[in-house]
Amino acid sequence: ADALSSAREHPLASEQLARLHRAAGDTRAAAHTFERAARCSADPRRAAALHYTAAVLFQDELHDPERAIDNLLLTSRADLLFADTFTRLLQLLARAGRKQEQLALLEARLRAPHEPHLGAMLHWERYRLYLERGELDQAQSALEASLEDDPESKQGLAALAELHLQRG
Image 1 (spheres, one colour):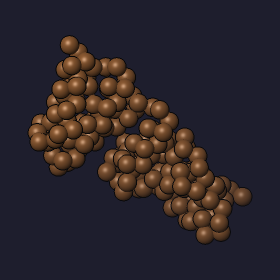
Image 2: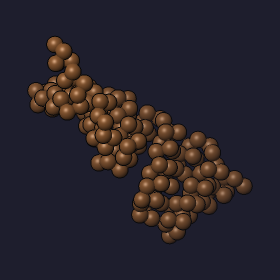
Image 3: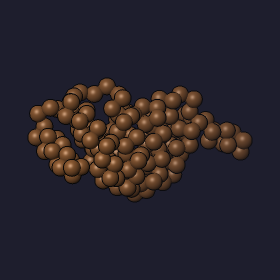
C-alpha cells in the first residue's frame, strides 16, 4: 500500500498512470492524473506539458472550461508559446467574459517575439477589449500601437477616425 501511495506522488509514475487511464477510456481520471503529475514534476517545462495535456482533455473531452483555464494558465506561466496554449486560453477567457485576464494574456504575448503582422492583430484585440470596457485612452493607445505594426490597415485607420469622432 505504501508503494502505491508513493508511486502516485512520483511524476513519471503518475504520468504513466494517466496514459493508462486514457488508453482505458477514462478521460476524467486521465485529466486529473495528468494534473497530479504536473504538480509533482520538478521540471517546469515538463509540468507545463502535463498541465497542457490535462487542459486539452478538460476542454475538448470533458467540457470543463474552468479546469481547462486553470491548467492553461499554469502552462502559460512556464511557456506561453507551448503548442496552442495562447490561442486556447485566449478563446476560453473570452467565452468566460474575463476581459482583464485576456488583456494580461495579450500583453504577455506581445512581450514574446512576434512578427509585425501578429503584433498588429494582438494590439487590435487589446483595442477592442478596452473599447468594450469604455477605457478610451487605453483603446486609443492600443490602436496606435496596432497601426505602428501595420500602418496600411484600413480597418485600423477607420477605427482611429471613429474613435476621434467619439471623443470629440
